[in-house]
Every structure is written in structure tokens, then in C-alpha cells.
Length: 322
Image (tube, rainbow, N blue to C red; front, side, top):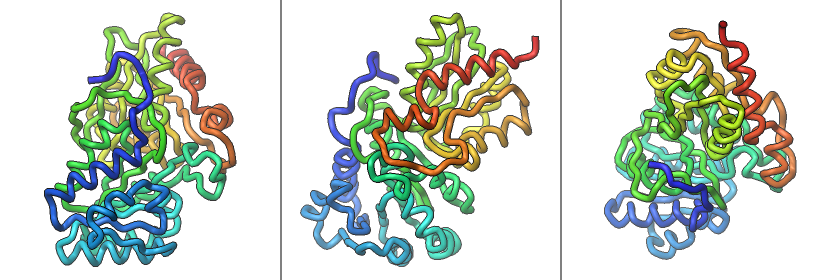
């Protein structure tokens, strides 16, 4: 269930992440945490203090860290492994693929500061391709939680489910979308807005979920009724929700803080073209590198804001057969 008013989360996502790690570790003596010299940045020092023998700082050696985590998992440990998203994806891909997925390891990979939320860390630290890289790896589950409530639910699933999993996670401030205690099923989209007579479905993830909810009001003023899905699991994708959206509303807009080339746009398109071809428009990053800037400025630069989603929805509706 979603909140009545979009408000900031009461704590940073990294603090919610650390609190949940501690809670999970209290009940699972095999849970361990690995980091690549970013425990301060990720806010996991309280875990280190509470469980000093179950937290490992591997230093700035991301690829090695993933291999260590894979080895630990094969001895029965449950490793949660963190670094910035570009390093977890681009820098450690071979180790994720071979040491992790290929040999059937049980590693929970966390890539922080996704897309424009990297902000002033700049282009080298601004991952627009991490989810696409991870989506291409066999057996990998790929997730982007929307807020702390969803994070809490998803981490329960990750800790209790064997396998390779990648979660991209905002480190700092975030908007609260879901009421505390709401539970989610990995692999199933969350329906945020569903009104009779919807003419287009917005399928969003991460940063773009809140922007999509803002777009709903703007579109209503123009007489366009929409459906909004939070597609927080990119793999396995909720194909049934996509097919139903295409069939029921006749047009789809995807919205993501990621490259459309390998991201949510690509994943949804693969389903639509096979099962229910309809007009589609894509809000996301179009073949560009990152840059320095605040998130709102970057959203404008890359066309990820509510006004961009509104424009895409109007284009999609206009392309529907008469």
C-alpha cells in the first residue's frame, strides 16, 4: 500500500540497509558483510562494531572481494557484498560471472549510488549500465528497491534465498512511497496506480517511480488516465504484468535511471514484441556518459523528470491506432 503523500524517508537508505543487516545477522550466524573500503560511505560501521568478526574490509580490490565472497558462500556463509555500482558491475564482472554465477555461489551483491544519484562523484562513478550487465549474467536476480520499506522486504528475501543476486541501492536520501510494513514479492511488479479506462501504462523503477507518480497528476490535468507499475525486479521480469498492461491500456512508457539500451526499456520491449506489440516510449539515458551535478539538474539533463514522462506518455497515446 502506498502512502497518501510523498515525503522524504526518515532515515538515509544506507542507514536502513545497515539496520536490516544487523537484524538479519542477529538471527543468522552465517551472515557476513564485505566492503571495498567504503564502510564509512555506506554507513555499515555499526555492523562492524556489533559483529567485528563478521565484517571484512577488503580494501579497494573489488574483483578480489567478489571472489572472496564466492568462496565464503561455498563454505556455508551468506555474504552481503558492497561497493559503488560501477565498480560492482564494470570492474568485477568477470569475478561475478565466473567465481559467483558459474560455480553456483550464494552472494548478495550491493551496488550503491545508481545512475544520477552518484551526483557530484561524476561520470566515472555514475553507472547507467550496471543493471544491464547483471541482467546478462545467467541465474542472476536483479533488483532496484524504491524506498526503505521495500528494501526491508527485499533483504528478507535475499538473505533467505540461495543464489546470485544484485541490488542497486541509493545511499542517501530517498522519498517514501510505501507504507511501513508493506511486503513485496521479488519477480512481481507493484501496482501503484490503476484506474478504469487507463490509456497508457508507465512501467518505472528506482528514481523514476516518484517522478512517474508526479506525472500522473500532470497527465490527469490533460485528460489522460494512466496505470503505473513499479517494476523493482528487472530479472526475473514480471512478464504477466507487462502483457496485461499492453493488452489493457494499449501503450507503454518505461522510465528508468539507467541506459535504455540494456535496461528496463530493453527488458520490457522483449516481452511486448513477443506477446502484445503496442506503441512504446522510453524515458531513460540514451547512449550517454555520466557527468557531475546534483540529481535534479541531472534528471533534467538526461530527461528523467516527471515532465519527460508526461511527454513520453502523450507521444505513446498519440501513436495508438484510431
